[in-house]
Length: 353
Image (cartoon, rainbow, N blue to C red; front, side, top):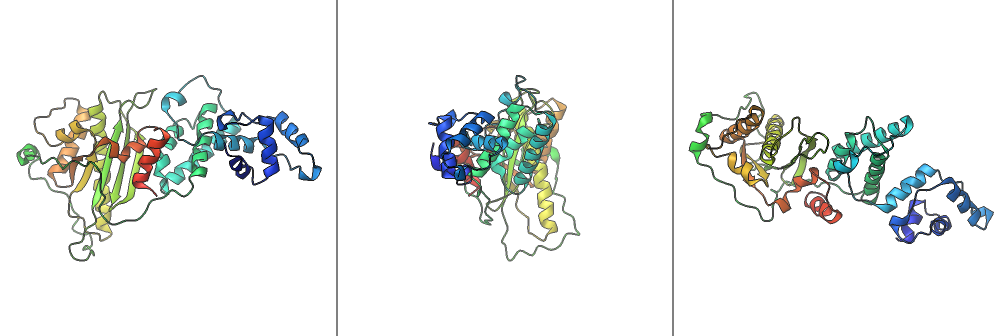
């Protein structure tokens, strides 16, 4: 624990911070307890010079300080949050929690995809939060305070991936089931204004976390879509039905990404941007990647088969290609689960600066 951190957290008042650390017996960040009225009174008496005494800092603000100083990772695991052994918040605290989640959702929309999984998990409990949920919401804002300048960069060059495996080349006969299908292109769209043969590469990375939700056992879908090397669209959400296998949840995630890609390709063409090449879709699930092109694969469940055929038909139409990426380099994993601090920052650094 660096006393300078505590000084900054309480507004730069060094004596106030030193007295607070002394009263609390602060030797390590994790030892900092909840602030009580008795501590505030002792703090006021400990400052020897009356002129140095400050107006008492509200306990709520000091609790925020405590959260900022203790932990700044984004732990928001559903197993922890779904625990019933927590006291519920009162109506004022609940409103405060909902405001925090609303602000965090706005930040995700504005480009902070590094907090998307935490916000999505916490938002599920917005109607009836408890103190455990508030604890992690405050921790989330502690993370934002510690890393306020994270952002995305507009880069038109195609993305590069380490340990990338070449696209699996399917036999054209494997997709004959869908006939001579083609991508639907509106004839009324403007002529592309891109000079020469230049075309912006669209790439999507997709991942799913099977049975992520500890209450309903629904899986979670995460994908990030790039134009060039710039993240343009991203999502992190629970799937609408329970998947009985990892394979099924991964295919459902592929279908969600495919539908967003179709929308994005239409939008870009509407803006006069040339979109001719198939969009690369990268997944770390080899079974889903292989099954998207092999005719012998059969899925009997209707809801799973719809995702399966939606993806395969899009491949046959030349809208997407499905490729494999090493799981260690799949930064869509950022939206599927909580990670240890070092792994979280490793993934964030792949897509943000």
